[in-house]
Image (cartoon, rainbow, N blue to C red; front, side, top):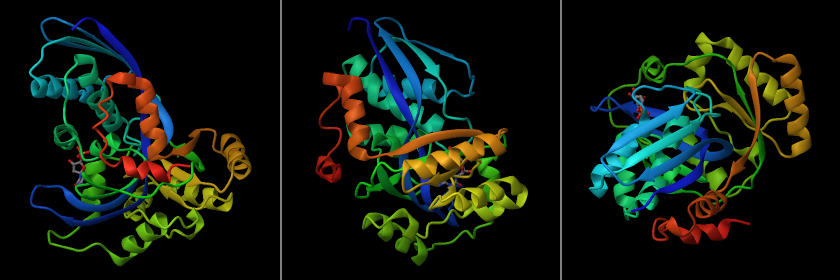
Length: 318
Ligand code: C5P
């Protein structure tokens, strides 16, 4: 192995719908969610040299324990390789904002590092490592629109949505994810997918316009109770034409999806003027076909073409 380097984009996600069912004996909750990749991205430069194992991370943020380091470690173990690996992380996805930034970074390393090491690693093994790193990590190995069940790690791709324009509004509010789950106070019992989730997933799967989706996020009532500002943002997004407007994950980012750019741009201008304390970001929904094309561009011949057995789903990409 000679020195190899690559620059990759690591995209954020939103939850188009999120229902939390029962508490499980392992401390997690069973979920029913719809994940969606969006265009907001961190950039990760990865350099890999032969030698004794050493992992360096250069970033303006110091997240401990660093999920990128943990991922690199797990890949070296799984491929039985040693290497000197350097990462430079440019963070744009807000931390703790419900956008899966850390999880996305982990998945980006899972997609890129085996290619740099020149070692194949099956999708099954990558999925297994991903699930051990966090509940949202496996989704980023697929991208696009997907239903997540169980802990959120069991994934079913949905047909592609159009690349609709959206806004992400992130106030400087930190919501603790474990606290949000606790506040839901779910029973420790078996339960079934709520009919309302199945209804929402069917709307998305059948390509109904977002205005007809009827989506929900179970965390909204408990998080809004503590942070009324978030409910205010939701109301403003709806008033400015977003359909739907919802919280992502356990917050605190609120998103709005818009039928076209003009409506979105008007809403963006309003938030920048009136809610100047909040971070306002314009994004678009990223389809699975676009996500995979991005990875093909980023890794070129290094991308294992056997990684994505659901190639046939790409036919939904227009
Ligand atoms: O898997 P991850 O590390 O992202 O989860 C963070 C925390 O969120 C867990 O420790 C748990 O408290 C909660 N969680 C949960 N059920 C899930 C996912 C996360 O209770 N399906």
